[in-house]
Each structure stands twice: as C-alpha cells, then as structure tokens.
Amino acid sequence: MKVGDLIMDKNYKNLDCNEIVPQVVVLKMSYLFMINYNYLIVDHVNNQSVIIDPAWEMEKIDQALATTQTSLSGILLTHSHPDHTHLAKPLAAKYHCPILMSKEEIETSGFYAQQLIGIDETPRKVGNILIQPILTPGHTPGSICYLIGDNLFTGDTLFAEGCGMCPDVQAAHTMWASLEQIKIRLKPETLVFPGHNYGKLPGQKFSFLLKDNIYLQFKNENDFAKYRLRKGQNILRFFDFC
Ligand SMILES: [Fe+2]
Image (cartoon, rainbow, N blue to C red; front, top):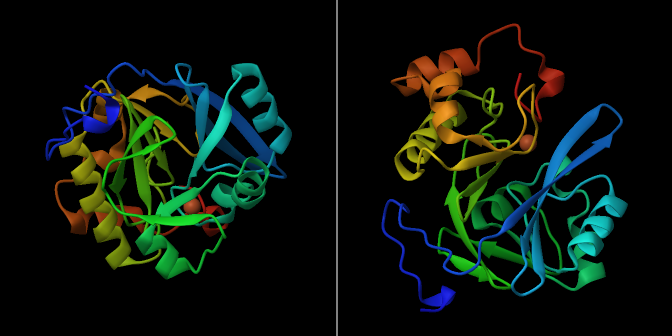
C-alpha cells in the first residue's frame, strides 16, 4: 500500500504514515523579546522536508535543510499572526514550494501569498509527507493544527502549559470546543509541538498535558471562558498565552 492510499477513520486514530516515519527537527527562533519554535519535518526516504510556522531566522532554516540534506517541499502555517508567518513568503520564493493555511484563516485574516493554498481537514501529502490538518479555531477564527505521524503541531492553540489567548467570550467557547475535539481525536502518546514554550520542552506527550494543563480540565465552555478571559492577564502577550 502506498502512503496516498491510506484510509483515515473519523477519530484519526488509525493514521498510518506507512514506511515514512518523519523526523522532527526543533528550531528555536528569536527576535527581540519573542521566541518561537519552528519545526522541520524530515522525510529521509525522499530527502524532503516541510516546515511549520517559519519565522525570524532564515539562516537556521537553511542550515537545517543542509544538515538533513533535504529540500523544502512545503510550508504549513497554523495561523496568520506575524510571529508564525514572518518567513513564509521569502521561503516559498526561495524554495519554490507551496504555503498551506486554512481557508477560514485566509478569509478572516486577509493573509496573501502567491503560493498560498487554502485547506480544510482533508488529509493531504506535501511532498511525500502525509499531513492531517485539524481545524482548531479559537485563538484565531481559522487556527489549524497539523498531525504528522504521531506528532501534533499546535501553533498557538495548545501549549504544554496552557492554550492560546482568545479575544472574546465567543472565541473562548470556540477554543474550548477545539480542545475537546483534540481530546477525542488524539492518541495519548501523541507528541505535542507548540509554537512557544513557557517552561516545558516541545514534544511532551499528550497524556501528560491531559493531566497537567489546566485548560484541558474544564468540563464546560462557560467555566473555560471565565478562566481564559480572567482579569489581570498581560495583554501585551496577546500573541501567545498568559
Ligand atoms: Fe498567535
């Protein structure tokens, strides 16, 4: 069976990347006070990579591609905030590859790039790497996570220590529903790679987050929204979590 023939079940628990087991290369990027994590997903069978949310330090990405001896076949964006998209356009131009973002995020943010492709939750291959997008609105209206093998790339939707900021009650309710979906659809052993960390290294098991992350403990959207929007948070950190 080829990778392209794989069949997904509704709960995405049978995602089988077949012969390709992607390697995750963690790239810590910084600019002024901001620190972001970019992830290069490496297919050593076909010598191709895709990158998640590239920002700030082009030379680190070039170096990672050289070290892994791969070519960049795609750019996956979790949402449109500048600290997650900063290098998407120059990278796409440099490596002649597509940029993926959810259709909802494109429509609501106005983000544009010549190589931009609007996506939904349909599984797709980028190069030969099988990608399962999971829509997780809340932090932004079109936020999306990417499940690749047993790794979930969450942008600002879910951190090891928390979840992304939400602008209002409706968005917080939406975020709660997105996190509930993740709970249903992920395997406990899935590794979670967020856009930022606040003490815990990227790549924690989802089973750990289920016990340790307070934002995964709320039983209803109203209690979740009250806590997510509580007073006294630093709004200067709107782009991440607080
Ligand atoms: Fe963000």
